Image (cartoon, rainbow, N blue to C red; front, side, top):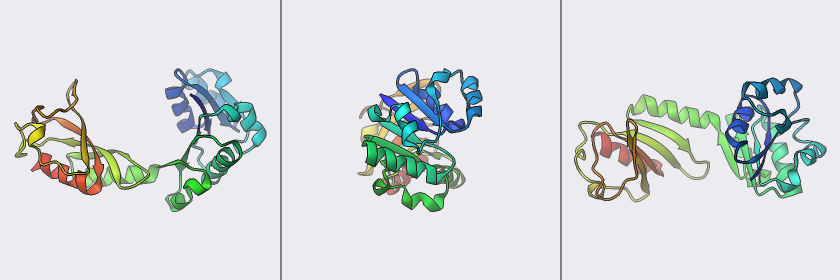
Amino acid sequence: MRVIIIGGGQVGTYIAGLLYENHDVKVIENRPKSIENFKNYNLPEELLVIGDGTDVDVLEKAGIRECDALVCVTGLDEINLTAAMVSKFEYDVPRVIGRVNNPKNVWLFNSGMGIDTKINQADIIGHMIADEMNYQSLMTLLKLSKGDYSIVRIRVDYHSSYVGKTVSQLDMPNNALLIAIYQDDELLIPHGDTVIEAGQNILAFGDDQAIEKLNQIFTS
């Protein structure tokens, strides 16, 4: 997959480090000193395109016409939105992901502005902190941008009435799915006959009401 990342700061460089071995990655950054970030992550300098990510000439140089996914992660929302609109509406990039820096601007990050998926870091961090304060056993790992769905980790409490029972015996809410069960170094894909044990970590997917119900199941 051909991926262009707008923003070569800490976030953009980190993402490039995760992707470049398996994908064709280019990073656009207008600060020449960002080369130092590349060196710190042991990334080849040829991945870096120096220039303005909203400039069509720079985008062309990075290969925007063959781009499969554009990731806008600069520290300025106006740059992320402008780069997204140019890429989506001028070059028809199939997948555009935008980083939201200011929560007040989240309403702007929509398909009408060229954004397919928004990453609202303040919202994600806020939910994680709230979860830690309200439910010591529950942590939000990923909050989806569409709807009220999340992927969470729930720790099975020793006092749960479902300890020792199988997955098929759980009173599962309709809008919930158990993804995996792990404890220490062991990872299990849950099936109907999988036994729930105290201390296990449950990875689950569901909407807010379903997650609340699952938290009650595994902690009381």
